[in-house]
Image: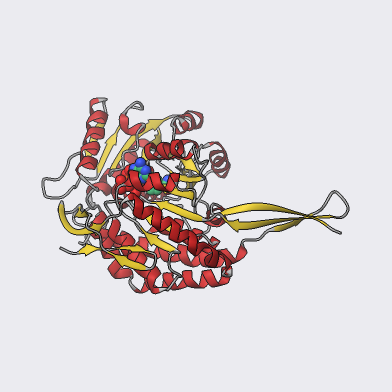
Amino acid sequence: MKTYPLYLNGEWLNSDTTLPVVNPASGETFAQMSAVDRPAVAVAIKNAHKALAGWRHLTAKGRGELLHKIASELDRRREEIARIITLENGKPIAQSQGEVAMSVDHLRWFAEEGRRVYGRIVPHQVEGKRHLVIKSPIGVVGAICPWNFPLVLAVRKIAPALVAGCPVILKPASQTPLTAVALAECVAKAELPKGVFQLVVGDATEIGAEFLANPLCRKITFTGSTEVGRKLIAGAAAGVKPLSLELGGNAPVLVFDDCSLETALAGVMMAKFRNSGQSCIAANRIYVQRQMYPGFLRALTDRVKAMETGDGMDPQSDIGPLINAGAVERAHEHVQDAVNGGGRLMCGGSALRRPGYFFEPTVIGNVSRNALCMFEETFAPIAPITPFETEAEVVELANNTIHGLAAYVFTRDMDRMFRMAESLEAGIIGVNDGLPTTSQCPFGGVKQSGWGRELGYEGIEAFLETKHVSIEME
Ligand code: NAP
Protein backbone atom coordinates (compact mmCIF):
# COMPACT_ATOMS: atom_id res chain seq x y z
CA MET A 1 0.00 0.00 0.00
CA LYS A 2 1.42 3.39 -0.97
CA THR A 3 2.49 5.85 1.73
CA TYR A 4 2.17 9.50 0.69
CA PRO A 5 4.74 12.10 1.80
CA LEU A 6 4.55 15.43 3.57
CA TYR A 7 5.82 18.57 1.84
CA LEU A 8 8.17 20.48 4.15
CA ASN A 9 10.52 23.30 3.22
CA GLY A 10 10.55 22.35 -0.47
CA GLU A 11 11.12 18.61 0.17
CA TRP A 12 8.93 15.52 0.06
CA LEU A 13 9.35 13.52 3.28
CA ASN A 14 7.94 10.20 4.48
CA SER A 15 7.61 9.61 8.22
CA ASP A 16 7.49 6.50 10.42
CA THR A 17 4.08 7.46 11.78
CA THR A 18 1.26 7.22 9.25
CA LEU A 19 -2.51 7.65 9.10
CA PRO A 20 -4.79 5.29 7.15
CA VAL A 21 -6.79 6.78 4.26
CA VAL A 22 -10.20 5.13 3.87
CA ASN A 23 -12.50 5.00 0.82
CA PRO A 24 -15.96 5.75 2.29
CA ALA A 25 -17.61 3.89 -0.60
CA SER A 26 -16.07 0.61 0.59
CA GLY A 27 -14.90 1.28 4.16
CA GLU A 28 -11.47 -0.02 3.13
CA THR A 29 -8.07 1.56 3.74
CA PHE A 30 -6.38 2.12 0.38
CA ALA A 31 -3.36 4.29 1.29
CA GLN A 32 -1.26 5.59 4.17
CA MET A 33 -0.36 9.22 4.79
CA SER A 34 2.82 10.34 6.55
CA ALA A 35 2.22 12.31 9.74
CA VAL A 36 4.22 14.95 11.64
CA ASP A 37 4.78 15.41 15.36
CA ARG A 38 4.65 18.78 17.13
CA PRO A 39 8.41 19.54 16.91
CA ALA A 40 8.21 19.09 13.12
CA VAL A 41 5.41 21.68 13.00
CA ALA A 42 7.63 24.10 14.93
CA VAL A 43 10.40 23.57 12.35
CA ALA A 44 7.91 24.15 9.52
CA ILE A 45 6.84 27.45 11.13
CA LYS A 46 10.49 28.49 11.50
CA ASN A 47 11.18 27.74 7.84
CA ALA A 48 8.03 29.54 6.76
CA HIS A 49 9.18 32.56 8.75
CA LYS A 50 12.57 32.44 6.99
CA ALA A 51 10.74 32.42 3.64
CA LEU A 52 8.59 35.42 4.60
CA ALA A 53 11.14 38.15 3.88
CA GLY A 54 11.73 37.08 0.27
CA TRP A 55 8.10 36.24 -0.47
CA ARG A 56 6.58 39.47 0.82
CA HIS A 57 9.02 41.55 -1.20
CA LEU A 58 8.17 39.86 -4.46
CA THR A 59 5.71 42.06 -6.36
CA ALA A 60 2.04 41.18 -6.22
CA LYS A 61 2.27 40.63 -9.98
CA GLY A 62 5.11 38.15 -9.43
CA ARG A 63 3.20 36.26 -6.74
CA GLY A 64 0.10 36.31 -8.94
CA GLU A 65 2.03 34.76 -11.84
CA LEU A 66 3.05 31.87 -9.57
CA LEU A 67 -0.60 31.41 -8.53
CA HIS A 68 -1.54 31.26 -12.23
CA LYS A 69 1.05 28.47 -12.63
CA ILE A 70 -0.51 26.52 -9.75
CA ALA A 71 -3.93 27.02 -11.38
CA SER A 72 -2.66 25.77 -14.75
CA GLU A 73 -1.18 22.63 -13.20
CA LEU A 74 -4.37 21.95 -11.25
CA ASP A 75 -6.36 22.41 -14.43
CA ARG A 76 -4.03 20.14 -16.43
CA ARG A 77 -4.48 17.38 -13.79
CA ARG A 78 -8.20 18.05 -13.25
CA GLU A 79 -9.50 14.54 -14.10
CA GLU A 80 -6.94 12.76 -11.93
CA ILE A 81 -7.36 15.11 -8.97
CA ALA A 82 -11.16 14.81 -9.19
CA ARG A 83 -10.74 11.03 -8.86
CA ILE A 84 -8.55 11.50 -5.75
CA ILE A 85 -11.27 13.67 -4.18
CA THR A 86 -13.95 11.06 -4.89
CA LEU A 87 -11.75 8.22 -3.65
CA GLU A 88 -11.15 9.72 -0.20
CA ASN A 89 -14.25 11.89 0.24
CA GLY A 90 -16.88 9.86 -1.65
CA LYS A 91 -18.67 12.63 -3.58
CA PRO A 92 -19.96 11.91 -7.11
CA ILE A 93 -17.20 12.38 -9.67
CA ALA A 94 -18.97 15.21 -11.53
CA GLN A 95 -19.05 17.18 -8.26
CA SER A 96 -15.34 16.53 -7.71
CA GLN A 97 -14.69 17.84 -11.22
CA GLY A 98 -16.74 20.92 -10.29
CA GLU A 99 -14.67 21.35 -7.13
CA VAL A 100 -11.43 21.32 -9.12
CA ALA A 101 -12.85 23.82 -11.63
CA MET A 102 -13.92 26.18 -8.82
CA SER A 103 -10.46 25.87 -7.20
CA VAL A 104 -8.80 26.85 -10.49
CA ASP A 105 -11.12 29.87 -10.70
CA HIS A 106 -10.34 30.91 -7.10
CA LEU A 107 -6.59 30.74 -7.82
CA ARG A 108 -6.88 32.77 -11.01
CA TRP A 109 -9.17 35.35 -9.41
CA PHE A 110 -6.88 35.89 -6.41
CA ALA A 111 -3.82 35.94 -8.69
CA GLU A 112 -5.32 39.08 -10.28
CA GLU A 113 -6.99 40.58 -7.20
CA GLY A 114 -3.64 40.57 -5.38
CA ARG A 115 -2.58 43.45 -7.65
CA ARG A 116 -5.42 45.57 -6.25
CA VAL A 117 -4.31 45.63 -2.61
CA TYR A 118 -4.37 49.42 -2.44
CA GLY A 119 -3.49 51.70 0.45
CA ARG A 120 -4.73 55.30 0.54
CA ILE A 121 -3.61 58.85 1.19
CA VAL A 122 -5.80 60.60 3.76
CA PRO A 123 -6.22 64.42 3.88
CA HIS A 124 -4.29 65.93 6.81
CA GLN A 125 -5.80 68.08 9.57
CA VAL A 126 -2.54 69.70 10.70
CA GLU A 127 -0.48 71.65 8.21
CA GLY A 128 2.87 70.00 7.58
CA LYS A 129 1.67 66.45 8.15
CA ARG A 130 0.81 63.75 5.60
CA HIS A 131 -1.03 60.48 6.30
CA LEU A 132 -0.72 57.22 4.45
CA VAL A 133 -2.58 53.97 5.03
CA ILE A 134 -0.62 50.96 3.80
CA LYS A 135 -1.23 47.22 3.81
CA SER A 136 1.33 44.60 4.87
CA PRO A 137 1.17 40.80 4.90
CA ILE A 138 0.29 39.53 8.36
CA GLY A 139 3.06 36.89 8.36
CA VAL A 140 3.13 33.09 8.60
CA VAL A 141 -0.34 31.51 8.38
CA GLY A 142 -1.54 28.16 9.74
CA ALA A 143 -4.49 26.92 7.64
CA ILE A 144 -6.72 24.12 9.00
CA CYS A 145 -9.28 22.53 6.66
CA PRO A 146 -12.15 20.02 6.80
CA TRP A 147 -12.82 16.94 4.63
CA ASN A 148 -16.09 17.92 2.95
CA PHE A 149 -14.53 20.07 0.18
CA PRO A 150 -10.90 19.04 0.60
CA LEU A 151 -9.54 21.01 -2.35
CA VAL A 152 -11.62 24.15 -2.72
CA LEU A 153 -11.66 25.05 0.98
CA ALA A 154 -7.86 24.74 1.14
CA VAL A 155 -7.50 26.92 -1.97
CA ARG A 156 -9.84 29.55 -0.43
CA LYS A 157 -7.20 29.99 2.26
CA ILE A 158 -3.88 29.45 0.53
CA ALA A 159 -4.57 31.51 -2.62
CA PRO A 160 -5.35 34.81 -0.83
CA ALA A 161 -2.71 34.22 1.87
CA LEU A 162 0.03 33.59 -0.70
CA VAL A 163 -0.92 36.49 -2.93
CA ALA A 164 -1.03 38.79 0.11
CA GLY A 165 2.62 37.83 0.77
CA CYS A 166 2.14 35.27 3.57
CA PRO A 167 3.81 31.84 3.70
CA VAL A 168 1.23 29.13 4.52
CA ILE A 169 1.31 25.81 6.35
CA LEU A 170 -1.69 23.71 5.35
CA LYS A 171 -3.19 21.11 7.67
CA PRO A 172 -5.92 19.16 5.85
CA ALA A 173 -8.45 16.88 7.57
CA SER A 174 -7.08 13.45 8.46
CA GLN A 175 -9.77 11.79 6.29
CA THR A 176 -8.71 13.62 3.10
CA PRO A 177 -4.94 14.21 3.03
CA LEU A 178 -4.32 12.93 -0.52
CA THR A 179 -6.14 15.82 -2.17
CA ALA A 180 -3.82 18.12 -0.21
CA VAL A 181 -0.80 16.13 -1.44
CA ALA A 182 -2.02 16.64 -5.03
CA LEU A 183 -2.41 20.37 -4.35
CA ALA A 184 1.10 20.48 -2.86
CA GLU A 185 2.41 18.79 -6.03
CA CYS A 186 0.84 21.56 -8.12
CA VAL A 187 2.47 24.18 -5.87
CA ALA A 188 5.83 22.38 -6.12
CA LYS A 189 5.51 22.32 -9.92
CA ALA A 190 5.04 26.10 -9.90
CA GLU A 191 8.43 26.37 -8.09
CA LEU A 192 7.49 28.68 -5.26
CA PRO A 193 10.49 29.46 -3.03
CA LYS A 194 11.04 26.78 -0.38
CA GLY A 195 9.11 27.23 2.84
CA VAL A 196 6.42 29.42 1.25
CA PHE A 197 3.95 26.55 1.12
CA GLN A 198 4.17 23.48 3.36
CA LEU A 199 1.89 20.53 4.08
CA VAL A 200 1.55 19.00 7.54
CA VAL A 201 -0.75 16.10 8.46
CA GLY A 202 -1.19 14.46 11.85
CA ASP A 203 -2.69 14.87 15.31
CA ALA A 204 -4.97 17.90 15.00
CA THR A 205 -4.68 18.89 18.65
CA GLU A 206 -0.87 18.89 18.50
CA ILE A 207 -0.67 20.79 15.22
CA GLY A 208 -3.33 23.27 16.37
CA ALA A 209 -1.51 23.76 19.69
CA GLU A 210 1.76 24.62 17.89
CA PHE A 211 0.01 27.04 15.53
CA LEU A 212 -1.57 28.71 18.59
CA ALA A 213 1.50 28.81 20.83
CA ASN A 214 4.26 29.61 18.34
CA PRO A 215 4.75 33.39 18.13
CA LEU A 216 6.12 33.13 14.58
CA CYS A 217 2.75 31.82 13.38
CA ARG A 218 0.85 35.10 13.08
CA LYS A 219 -2.59 33.94 12.02
CA ILE A 220 -4.78 30.82 12.00
CA THR A 221 -7.45 30.39 9.38
CA PHE A 222 -9.83 27.54 10.14
CA THR A 223 -12.78 25.87 8.45
CA GLY A 224 -14.62 23.21 10.41
CA SER A 225 -17.06 22.68 13.22
CA THR A 226 -18.22 25.35 15.66
CA GLU A 227 -17.07 23.04 18.47
CA VAL A 228 -13.41 23.08 17.33
CA GLY A 229 -13.74 26.79 16.48
CA ARG A 230 -14.59 27.48 20.13
CA LYS A 231 -11.48 25.56 21.23
CA LEU A 232 -9.32 27.66 18.92
CA ILE A 233 -10.86 30.87 20.27
CA ALA A 234 -10.03 29.75 23.81
CA GLY A 235 -6.49 28.74 22.80
CA ALA A 236 -5.87 32.00 20.94
CA ALA A 237 -6.45 34.12 24.05
CA ALA A 238 -2.97 33.73 25.58
CA GLY A 239 -1.11 34.89 22.48
CA VAL A 240 -3.93 37.17 21.22
CA LYS A 241 -3.64 35.26 17.95
CA PRO A 242 -5.86 36.50 15.10
CA LEU A 243 -8.32 33.92 13.79
CA SER A 244 -10.50 33.61 10.72
CA LEU A 245 -13.22 31.06 11.38
CA GLU A 246 -15.58 29.40 8.89
CA LEU A 247 -17.77 27.27 11.15
CA GLY A 248 -20.93 25.21 11.08
CA GLY A 249 -24.22 26.21 9.48
CA ASN A 250 -27.92 25.38 9.79
CA ALA A 251 -29.34 26.98 6.65
CA PRO A 252 -33.08 27.61 6.45
CA VAL A 253 -34.92 27.52 3.12
CA LEU A 254 -37.98 29.77 2.80
CA VAL A 255 -40.30 28.77 -0.05
CA PHE A 256 -43.05 31.38 -0.52
CA ASP A 257 -46.39 30.80 -2.27
CA ASP A 258 -45.47 33.33 -4.96
CA CYS A 259 -42.30 31.56 -6.15
CA SER A 260 -41.74 29.49 -9.27
CA LEU A 261 -42.18 25.87 -8.11
CA GLU A 262 -39.64 24.72 -10.68
CA THR A 263 -36.99 27.23 -9.50
CA ALA A 264 -37.57 26.29 -5.85
CA LEU A 265 -37.30 22.56 -6.58
CA ALA A 266 -34.08 22.97 -8.56
CA GLY A 267 -32.63 25.24 -5.86
CA VAL A 268 -33.51 22.89 -3.01
CA MET A 269 -32.16 19.83 -4.88
CA MET A 270 -28.85 21.67 -5.29
CA ALA A 271 -28.68 23.23 -1.81
CA LYS A 272 -29.76 20.04 -0.03
CA PHE A 273 -28.24 17.11 -1.92
CA ARG A 274 -24.90 18.42 -3.24
CA ASN A 275 -22.07 16.45 -1.61
CA SER A 276 -24.77 14.18 -0.07
CA GLY A 277 -25.83 17.03 2.21
CA GLN A 278 -22.33 17.39 3.70
CA SER A 279 -21.89 21.07 2.97
CA CYS A 280 -21.68 23.90 5.48
CA ILE A 281 -24.18 25.87 3.38
CA ALA A 282 -26.46 22.83 2.89
CA ALA A 283 -30.20 23.46 3.22
CA ASN A 284 -30.81 22.03 6.69
CA ARG A 285 -34.51 22.84 7.24
CA ILE A 286 -37.13 23.69 4.65
CA TYR A 287 -40.13 25.91 5.39
CA VAL A 288 -42.84 25.99 2.70
CA GLN A 289 -45.80 28.38 2.72
CA ARG A 290 -49.15 26.67 3.23
CA GLN A 291 -50.61 26.93 -0.30
CA MET A 292 -47.40 25.73 -2.00
CA TYR A 293 -46.73 23.03 0.60
CA PRO A 294 -48.60 19.93 -0.76
CA GLY A 295 -47.39 20.39 -4.36
CA PHE A 296 -43.81 21.12 -3.30
CA LEU A 297 -43.65 18.08 -0.98
CA ARG A 298 -45.00 15.76 -3.70
CA ALA A 299 -42.73 17.08 -6.44
CA LEU A 300 -39.59 17.08 -4.26
CA THR A 301 -40.32 13.49 -3.16
CA ASP A 302 -40.63 12.41 -6.82
CA ARG A 303 -37.26 13.97 -7.67
CA VAL A 304 -35.53 12.49 -4.66
CA LYS A 305 -36.94 9.01 -5.37
CA ALA A 306 -35.37 9.23 -8.84
CA MET A 307 -31.86 9.82 -7.43
CA GLU A 308 -29.26 7.07 -7.71
CA THR A 309 -27.19 6.28 -4.62
CA GLY A 310 -23.85 4.58 -5.22
CA ASP A 311 -20.08 4.78 -5.49
CA GLY A 312 -19.10 8.31 -6.51
CA MET A 313 -16.78 6.84 -9.16
CA ASP A 314 -19.88 5.66 -11.06
CA PRO A 315 -21.03 8.61 -13.21
CA GLN A 316 -24.65 7.46 -12.67
CA SER A 317 -24.47 8.15 -8.90
CA ASP A 318 -26.19 11.32 -7.67
CA ILE A 319 -25.55 10.54 -4.00
CA GLY A 320 -22.27 9.10 -2.76
CA PRO A 321 -21.43 7.69 0.67
CA LEU A 322 -21.25 9.75 3.85
CA ILE A 323 -17.76 10.26 5.26
CA ASN A 324 -17.84 7.55 7.98
CA ALA A 325 -19.99 5.25 10.10
CA GLY A 326 -20.58 8.00 12.70
CA ALA A 327 -22.18 10.21 10.02
CA VAL A 328 -24.58 7.38 9.07
CA GLU A 329 -25.54 6.88 12.71
CA ARG A 330 -26.25 10.59 13.15
CA ALA A 331 -28.38 10.64 9.97
CA HIS A 332 -30.39 7.73 11.32
CA GLU A 333 -30.86 9.45 14.66
CA HIS A 334 -32.17 12.61 12.95
CA VAL A 335 -34.68 10.63 10.88
CA GLN A 336 -35.91 8.59 13.85
CA ASP A 337 -36.30 11.70 15.97
CA ALA A 338 -38.27 13.52 13.23
CA VAL A 339 -40.56 10.52 12.62
CA ASN A 340 -41.10 9.92 16.36
CA GLY A 341 -42.10 13.57 16.65
CA GLY A 342 -44.89 13.14 14.05
CA GLY A 343 -42.94 13.65 10.79
CA ARG A 344 -44.13 11.76 7.68
CA LEU A 345 -41.40 9.75 5.96
CA MET A 346 -41.98 10.33 2.22
CA CYS A 347 -38.94 8.39 0.94
CA GLY A 348 -35.57 7.02 2.08
CA GLY A 349 -34.78 7.05 5.78
CA SER A 350 -32.30 4.16 6.05
CA ALA A 351 -28.68 3.21 5.61
CA LEU A 352 -28.00 0.98 2.59
CA ARG A 353 -27.16 -2.66 3.34
CA ARG A 354 -23.84 -2.74 1.52
CA PRO A 355 -20.19 -2.00 2.34
CA GLY A 356 -19.36 1.68 2.78
CA TYR A 357 -21.28 4.47 4.49
CA PHE A 358 -24.36 5.01 2.34
CA PHE A 359 -27.59 6.66 3.50
CA GLU A 360 -30.66 6.91 1.25
CA PRO A 361 -31.71 10.40 0.14
CA THR A 362 -34.65 11.18 2.38
CA VAL A 363 -37.67 13.49 2.47
CA ILE A 364 -39.73 13.95 5.64
CA GLY A 365 -42.90 16.05 5.66
CA ASN A 366 -44.70 17.80 8.55
CA VAL A 367 -41.54 17.80 10.64
CA SER A 368 -42.02 19.25 14.11
CA ARG A 369 -40.31 22.61 14.57
CA ASN A 370 -38.63 21.13 17.65
CA ALA A 371 -37.11 18.13 15.87
CA LEU A 372 -33.32 17.66 16.12
CA CYS A 373 -32.89 18.14 12.38
CA MET A 374 -34.47 21.62 12.64
CA PHE A 375 -31.84 22.71 15.21
CA GLU A 376 -28.66 20.69 14.62
CA GLU A 377 -26.54 20.56 11.49
CA THR A 378 -27.62 17.24 9.88
CA PHE A 379 -24.78 16.86 7.31
CA ALA A 380 -26.66 14.11 5.44
CA PRO A 381 -29.06 13.83 2.45
CA ILE A 382 -32.15 14.41 4.60
CA ALA A 383 -34.72 17.07 3.65
CA PRO A 384 -37.06 17.93 6.56
CA ILE A 385 -40.03 20.03 5.44
CA THR A 386 -42.61 21.92 7.45
CA PRO A 387 -45.37 24.37 6.49
CA PHE A 388 -45.64 28.03 7.58
CA GLU A 389 -48.29 30.74 7.26
CA THR A 390 -46.77 34.24 7.29
CA GLU A 391 -43.54 36.00 6.37
CA ALA A 392 -43.05 37.31 9.91
CA GLU A 393 -43.48 33.83 11.36
CA VAL A 394 -40.95 32.20 9.00
CA VAL A 395 -38.31 34.90 9.52
CA GLU A 396 -38.51 34.29 13.25
CA LEU A 397 -38.16 30.53 12.71
CA ALA A 398 -35.25 31.00 10.29
CA ASN A 399 -33.33 33.21 12.70
CA ASN A 400 -33.98 31.02 15.73
CA THR A 401 -30.52 29.38 15.69
CA ILE A 402 -27.02 30.01 16.99
CA HIS A 403 -25.78 29.67 13.39
CA GLY A 404 -25.92 32.14 10.52
CA LEU A 405 -23.95 30.96 7.50
CA ALA A 406 -26.40 30.64 4.59
CA ALA A 407 -30.15 31.12 4.03
CA TYR A 408 -32.22 30.51 0.89
CA VAL A 409 -35.37 32.32 -0.23
CA PHE A 410 -37.65 31.45 -3.13
CA THR A 411 -40.03 34.22 -4.17
CA ARG A 412 -40.88 36.37 -7.19
CA ASP A 413 -41.79 39.40 -5.07
CA MET A 414 -39.06 42.02 -5.42
CA ASP A 415 -40.01 43.85 -2.22
CA ARG A 416 -39.90 40.59 -0.30
CA MET A 417 -36.42 39.83 -1.69
CA PHE A 418 -35.11 43.04 -0.12
CA ARG A 419 -36.96 42.46 3.16
CA MET A 420 -35.49 38.94 3.39
CA ALA A 421 -31.95 40.05 2.47
CA GLU A 422 -32.13 42.62 5.26
CA SER A 423 -33.82 40.56 7.98
CA LEU A 424 -32.33 37.08 7.65
CA GLU A 425 -29.36 36.58 9.99
CA ALA A 426 -26.95 34.89 7.59
CA GLY A 427 -23.73 35.85 5.82
CA ILE A 428 -24.81 34.37 2.48
CA ILE A 429 -28.35 34.66 1.13
CA GLY A 430 -29.40 32.81 -2.01
CA VAL A 431 -32.50 34.36 -3.58
CA ASN A 432 -33.92 31.87 -6.11
CA ASP A 433 -30.36 30.51 -6.11
CA GLY A 434 -29.32 27.18 -4.58
CA LEU A 435 -25.59 27.65 -5.25
CA PRO A 436 -24.60 31.20 -4.26
CA THR A 437 -20.80 30.77 -3.93
CA THR A 438 -18.51 32.60 -6.37
CA SER A 439 -14.82 33.63 -6.30
CA GLN A 440 -15.45 37.38 -6.33
CA CYS A 441 -17.99 37.64 -3.46
CA PRO A 442 -17.43 37.26 0.29
CA PHE A 443 -18.28 33.93 1.91
CA GLY A 444 -18.73 33.48 5.66
CA GLY A 445 -21.12 33.48 8.56
CA VAL A 446 -22.64 35.62 11.30
CA LYS A 447 -23.35 34.58 14.91
CA GLN A 448 -21.64 31.26 15.79
CA SER A 449 -20.97 30.42 12.11
CA GLY A 450 -17.69 32.27 12.24
CA TRP A 451 -15.48 35.32 12.13
CA GLY A 452 -14.36 37.04 8.94
CA ARG A 453 -14.91 36.24 5.29
CA GLU A 454 -13.22 34.20 2.58
CA LEU A 455 -13.34 34.94 -1.16
CA GLY A 456 -13.91 38.38 -2.62
CA TYR A 457 -11.63 41.25 -1.67
CA GLU A 458 -12.41 40.43 1.98
CA GLY A 459 -10.62 37.10 1.42
CA ILE A 460 -7.29 38.92 0.98
CA GLU A 461 -7.97 41.44 3.76
CA ALA A 462 -7.93 38.49 6.18
CA PHE A 463 -4.16 38.18 5.59
CA LEU A 464 -3.23 41.86 5.68
CA GLU A 465 -2.38 44.28 8.46
CA THR A 466 -3.42 47.91 8.04
CA LYS A 467 -0.78 50.48 9.03
CA HIS A 468 -1.13 54.23 9.41
CA VAL A 469 2.05 56.13 8.49
CA SER A 470 2.02 59.73 9.71
CA ILE A 471 4.74 61.93 8.17
CA GLU A 472 5.75 65.27 9.70
CA MET A 473 7.33 67.31 6.90
CA GLU A 474 10.50 69.29 7.68
P1 NAP B 1 -13.84 19.46 12.45
O1 NAP B 1 -13.97 18.20 13.21
O2 NAP B 1 -13.98 20.73 13.17
O3 NAP B 1 -12.44 19.36 11.70
C1 NAP B 1 -11.98 20.37 10.85
C2 NAP B 1 -10.47 20.42 10.88
O4 NAP B 1 -10.06 20.79 12.20
C3 NAP B 1 -9.79 19.10 10.57
O5 NAP B 1 -8.59 19.36 9.87
C4 NAP B 1 -9.49 18.56 11.95
O6 NAP B 1 -8.39 17.66 11.96
C5 NAP B 1 -9.11 19.84 12.67
N1 NAP B 1 -9.21 19.78 14.13
C6 NAP B 1 -9.94 18.94 14.91
N2 NAP B 1 -9.72 19.21 16.21
C7 NAP B 1 -8.83 20.23 16.27
C8 NAP B 1 -8.20 20.96 17.32
N3 NAP B 1 -8.46 20.70 18.60
N4 NAP B 1 -7.35 21.95 17.00
C9 NAP B 1 -7.07 22.25 15.72
N5 NAP B 1 -7.63 21.59 14.66
C10 NAP B 1 -8.51 20.61 14.94
O7 NAP B 1 -14.91 19.54 11.29
P2 NAP B 1 -15.27 18.45 10.19
O8 NAP B 1 -16.14 17.43 10.83
O9 NAP B 1 -14.03 17.99 9.51
O10 NAP B 1 -16.07 19.34 9.13
C11 NAP B 1 -17.42 19.53 9.21
C12 NAP B 1 -17.76 20.88 9.84
O11 NAP B 1 -17.12 21.92 9.13
C13 NAP B 1 -19.23 21.18 9.77
O12 NAP B 1 -19.67 21.75 10.97
C14 NAP B 1 -19.32 22.21 8.64
O13 NAP B 1 -20.44 23.04 8.69
C15 NAP B 1 -18.06 22.95 8.82
N6 NAP B 1 -17.72 23.64 7.58
C16 NAP B 1 -17.81 25.00 7.54
C17 NAP B 1 -17.53 25.67 6.36
C18 NAP B 1 -17.63 27.17 6.28
O14 NAP B 1 -17.14 27.71 5.30
N7 NAP B 1 -18.22 27.85 7.23
C19 NAP B 1 -17.16 24.96 5.23
C20 NAP B 1 -17.09 23.57 5.31
C21 NAP B 1 -17.36 22.93 6.50
P3 NAP B 1 -8.60 16.07 11.95
O15 NAP B 1 -9.29 15.77 10.67
O16 NAP B 1 -7.20 15.58 11.95
O17 NAP B 1 -9.38 15.74 13.14
